[in-house]
Image (cartoon, rainbow, N blue to C red; front, side):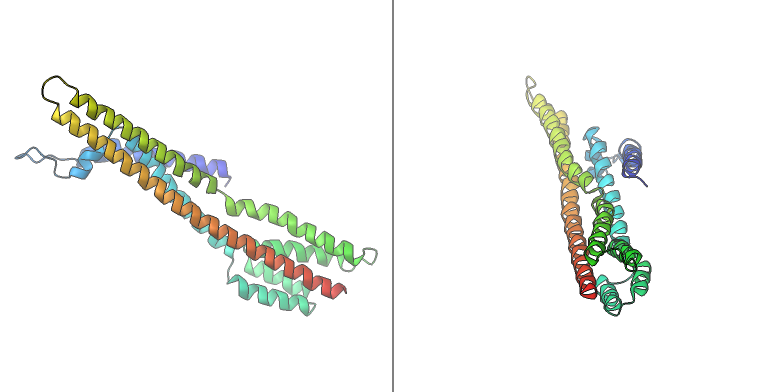
Length: 257
């Protein structure tokens, strides 16, 4: 699925869920004690009174969770079927022994991003190895070019949706701050009444401010942690791919020597 289509689906689904929760589920669950007149679930009551921006914050929180699941599944698939060090040890051994076809089959068995890059390189070398008119330097340069082209395809897949996480981390903070500001405006408006302040309006304004602050921080903190975690994972993948590609080219150079 293309990134734009996935983002649109996540956005629409998150919006529907958040609107359903904030405007339908929470009001239905917000019951009052008939004897005291106080809410039975104060947290739900505060969320209900916190204004429509809470639905936006909940939508962004749901989007972050969806992106986290998507990144986990994608990076798990990119890792391949086995530990990459074990796979690469067998791959390197096959190249040293001249079993180029076996090395390619190991890539098919392993799958994942590193295997896809190495398979592009080894298959390109296999196509050129029997061509007598091509010099060893040309074969190696074409092999390296195939590796680089494969990396250009795989790396964007590993980095997909990371920008969305960083964007949500920034926007959630701003939306939470906007809700906080609106709530404080209402609170100070209640205090500015002539005579005794409107205690109910004052409490609602403060509650709106605090709920929006908490919602914005929750979405932003989760997005920042997820972003940094996945950036570190992608860097590890990049390092593994670069190291494996370099070792493979060096082994091929030894064969050509």
